[in-house]
Amino acid sequence: MDRTIWDKLDAGEGVGKNTPGIEEFDSSIKECEDLRIAYNTTVMTRDEQRTLLSKIVGYKVDERTFIVPPFHCDLGFNIVLGKNVLINYDCVLLDCTKIIIGDNVLIGPGTKIVTASHPIDVNERRERITVCHPVKIGNDVWIGAGAVILPGITIGDRSVVGAGSIVTRDVPSDTVVAGNPARKLRSL
Image 1 (cartoon, rainbow, N blue to C red):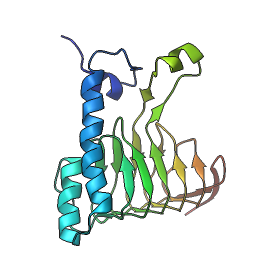
Image 2: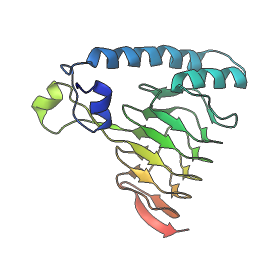
Image 3: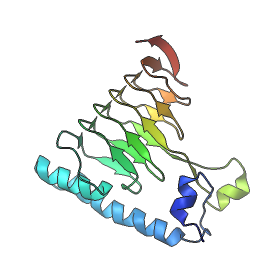
Image 4: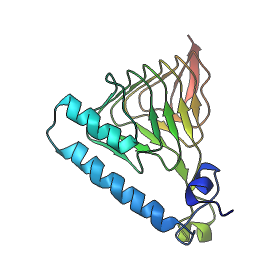
């Protein structure tokens, strides 16, 4: 049985401009872009925003979960939002594979959560090879403004990521990290 491009992305395999199924990937990005542009530029009530956000992610979003526009994502359907989540202005969620965000999470403005990476080898980059690894953010996490969460990272429950931090390693539960690269400051 042939594996789809989605199977390959979810498995962390490299996909590129010549990978079978890339047209479906590109089409899905365009569909999400059209919805996201409407979300970011149309004056709507909170209920209308939640309805459109639900269409972007592909399921009914919790009534207390909100993404403040503008926000940017690749596909939308790989974003899993818990209950009572607030994602502030101008966040980027590059969701070529899963981004799972737990309940009661606060994400500061300008934060970037990235699942995609590219090879160091120049020839593979010329082929636009992308390798993806999921990001998981636990419950009751606070991510400060302008943080960057890199591919494959897990942030444990109740942890805090300081503003402007670049998270290159997993963050255990009940931990405060900050800096570039983010380092443990203390336990909670």
